[in-house]
Image (cartoon, rainbow, N blue to C red; front, top):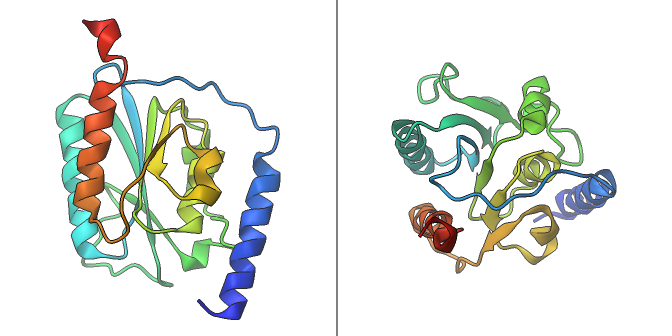
Length: 185
C-alpha cells in the first residue's frame, strides 16, 4: 500500500473511532431461525464473490428473511452489464470521501435500519464496508476477525488468511445456527 493511501486509511480509522465513540445500539445475539431481517455487506469487485453473495441472498429470501445488501465496487464505475442495480445496491470509490467513509445517501438509510443480523462478507480489510458495519444500528453484527476492527462487531470469525469467501460463509451459517441452540431445545 502506498504511503498516501496508508495515511488516508489511518485517518479513516481515526475518524471512524471518533464517530463511534459513545454510540449506542441495542445488542442482541439472534440465531438464524429467529431472525427476520438481514443486512449484507460485501465486496462486489470480484465477480465470483458477487455470485456467491447472490446465492446466499437467495437462500435467505427462500427462508423468508427480509434482506438488504450493499456491495462496494473498488473502482470509479460499476460495469453495467455485470451488476443489476434493481436488486442490489452498490457504491464505488466515487461515493467514498478522502478517508474512505461512504457518502452515498442510500448508505445512511442502510445504516439506520435495525436489522436483526448484519453480516460483513469481506475476507480482506475494506474500510468503506467497516465504516458501514460500525455505524449500523443492527442488533447483531458479524464479520471476519481483524484485531483493529473487533470493537465494531458482536461476533468475529477467525478465518485464516487466504481462505475463500465460501469458507467464511459456511462458518457464518454454522455459528448462526448454534446461537441460542440450548434455549430452543
